[in-house]
Length: 265
Length: 362
Image: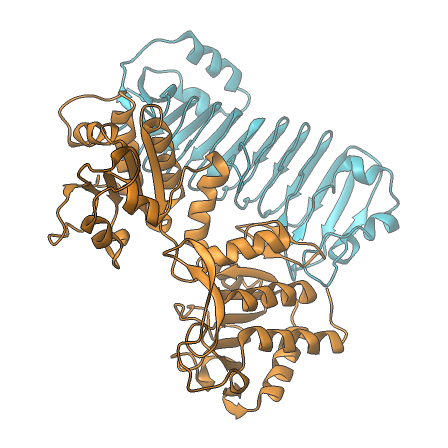
């Protein structure tokens, strides 16, 4: 297990794109220490920010966190990264496979464009978790994003595929969703599913509903039981939500309207 | 021209020197405001490149509400002149379009060109201020705001909702247009609302002709968008910290950077009037402001330099809202010669030259 131990408070945002177990496996600690991760003209390197201990394994632990650690685990394609603390924006951006765990909270755009693997945030996530960044085609795109705490506004904005689990979410959850599944054990904020085309939102409760969502009854769906089975090991709170009768709303009728929102009846 | 350093009057040379020292000592400088003529914007982007700074126009919220929707799904847009010449149905969304003369000008004429020539012009409003002076049919907005209302209207336009609701009637009127235009302010409607509105326009174009007339922000944001695009290939919130232009609309939001304590120096550029930022005074700042403005005073910032106001005391290329282009505006006040007045571009270039002399570079 390789380790990066944060030396102290970060004087600027740093960009950990490509700081993955695979990228570090072929480097000596001295070589890794020279990798540029700063975002200002001062040119911070990995060695300036972290005490580095490498063993060539496919598992990396970042000891100490900061809301200025951007793109942790971005483009991860194999192995595991665990952050003991907080991270900044774009956690696991474009990640293809592997596991990424954050014991603290994440900034905005966690899991954006991630096509595979599992991202777990044990604390809260900022706005646009699983959402698309500016000018991107899609947010979460096949990966699994588990947020044990609260997610901010615009959870899963323009999400294309994959699963998001969260404890609660802010306003406009599932906005502009293309497809995929979001299960929130607690409450959603106002106006969930704004502009959603397809996809499934399941929540314990919700704020103000859009006038473009219409109730379609309480169907007994095999899909929900299958989903509950598959969620058992990912999130017990979310899986238990699926045990009872669910009321279904169809929307957003402002678009093609093939999306759906389920809440306990 | 007047300048102040730490509250005391200074000559331009001393103010430029102090500005260069302040920027050279910083780690994460931001150039904000950018409410200025094109030559000053160009000089600001060059300074940022030399310094490794990021840029953020005061018009950011408006610019990104529009660009966000545009980058996601494109836009079908028209101009003010085409609207006046061709539109037989005009839907005015929100309050902001009613400011200024635009709506009165549209109401005063009938379509004279194209397929709707000779027909009457119908003005419709959604969530407007109920202006009694101009004849129009008013529809109230939903309690959730304009974006929710636009979604609701679009559901009726698509035929996914039906009934006797007001929006059913409005949707019918829109489809009856021969050449329709929807006027909106992107900041007022928001990015989600702007995208929904463009989707509605696409739906309407299945059977008739419909376009958007998007209002520009009043702080040269559209000029900044164009200049940034031709200079960096990106939208305006760009940073040069890593020797190349990086775009990130969240990271380079100057208000966020300053509130989070990331930025340690700022340069506020407003040769044209712009709302005073709340963060002024919270970090070392250089203010380059128009002469005669409220900010043209020693207490505004550590270093304050006044410059000519484009279109008044100096000439400059500015966004022309009426024509929808960048156009040169002559100085309207001939009492001063150009030689007596510093331009914002001149001051920014002098600061950059001084930084290069000091050996500061990204």
